[in-house]
Each structure stands twice: as C-alpha cells, then as structure tokens.
Length: 83
Image (cartoon, helix red, strand yellow):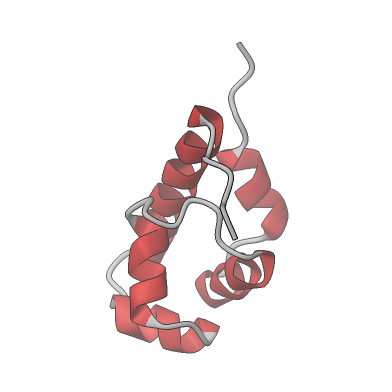
C-alpha cells in the first residue's frame, strides 16, 4: 500500500504535538510516560520528534491521559494558527 505524502501543514501539526507532549512530560522519563499510556518508548520518541506526525487517535488519547492533558487542549494547541 502506498501512503499519500504528508502536507506541510500535517508535518507542522505533528511537530506541535510532539513539542506539547515533551513539555507536558517535563521531568518524567519517556519510558515511564510510554508505559503509563500503554505504548512503546520508541513510539513516544517518534511522536515527540515529529517522525510520526500522524499518530493514531487512540495513541494520542492514551498519551494525553497519561500526561493529564485534555483532548480539547491538544486540539486547540496543535491546530494551525489563523492567518
């Protein structure tokens, strides 16, 4: 299966998500947060670094819960700023 290339906007949104998750993680280790969310540390690393800019909804929801973030906050902070 061939995957459609990501748009620049999708890549930017993925970078914003990664930054938000890194900031919310604070001093907690990547392994601790990943375990609390039920994902691998490598998955979290890829999301935080923007290498996985379009993670699955349930992965994002699990990470948000593990970090004490609401989905509304994630959407608001990761959405494109109006031009």
